[in-house]
Length: 359
Image (cartoon, rainbow, N blue to C red; front, side, top):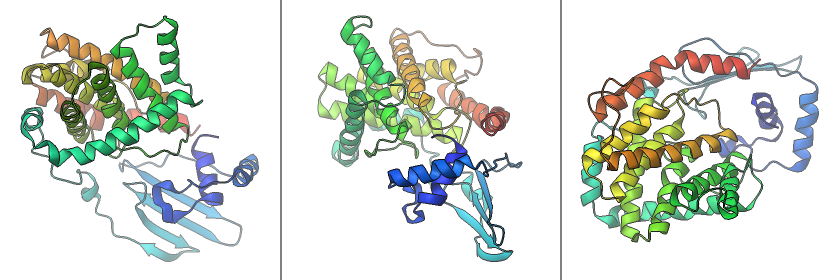
């Protein structure tokens, strides 16, 4: 079962609101059957709610005697209003402006700042964070390569490497590893993931290709951690411009981070790192986000393949030029252009996607 209606039914029948985003983590087989039976009644109706708020959920429930209305705004756990039979049970003041910016002041973030800091930061300050990234995200990638999850794109790539159809190279191995993690995550695997910008898929995309690259190249632990630092901070920088919620695929933000980190680990200059990011953003910025599901793993593999291409081009001093579509005069303008595309240009795209999903 996938989709909005099953999610609503699952929450009603088996949800535990105290677990917040893990609200349906302990669903039993019996409850799954209850959900199926409930869905067969076809009493859940969904509609796209008009308005400018990027995340708005309104639930209206009636059993014939009582009527309940619940409203959620901006973030998935931010319940702002509950009414029962017209009586206010909860009313939370919600300043929309507070949700249109990042949780921290990220004005200092530029690619130059990230590059310079990655070169000089005391490794002991960041090592504990990235040790967790390596442990958690590697575990779910390994699980994704063993089990049957989603369309199994990660395992498919690995199987074709082993059979000789695909080349036994770092690029294919990195794509396999990263997409396997997403295969498992998007299919309900309960293993934890270290996120980036609030997203498990972005966290895995930004880390797993770099982990695999470092393993294959026998890089030191310090080199790996500095590479992960570049990847994750670049991802956050691009994603900050894209915004919290957009029809712009977050895996592409993370793929830009991968391109930056690969170039950095190859010994590339600051200018080359900028060129690698430019190459990938100029290539894949049209990829849409249409929800968290099995196809995310396929988008991740596409992003990883493109990240390697973007890196190799940059290392050979080949880069998309200013004026090539959304490519700006420098990397920061290009990233701002991507943000404008995501927040303004793709607003209609988001509405169309929602319309398709709620037909």
